[in-house]
Image (cartoon, rainbow, N blue to C red; front, side):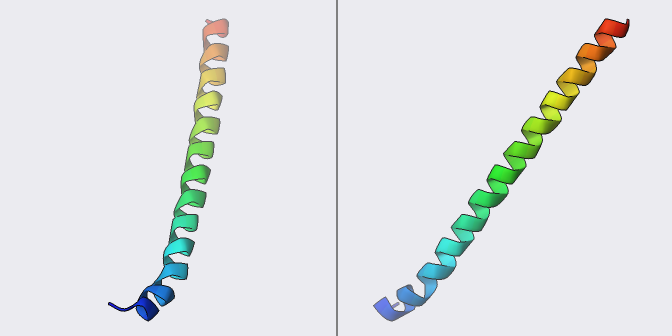
Amino acid sequence: MGIAQLGVDFPYLANTLKLMWILLAYFSCSLYVLMSACHKCSQRFDAER
C-alpha cells in the first residue's frame, strides 16, 4: 500500500466518519425526543389516574 493509495482512500474515510457522526447525532436526538415524549405522556397518565 503506497502513499498515493492512502491519499485516495483518506477523503472517503473522512466522509464515512462524517456520515457516521451525523447518523449518530440524528439517532441520539430522535431518541432524546422520544424519551421526553414518553416521559410527558406518562406524567399526564399519572395525573389522570
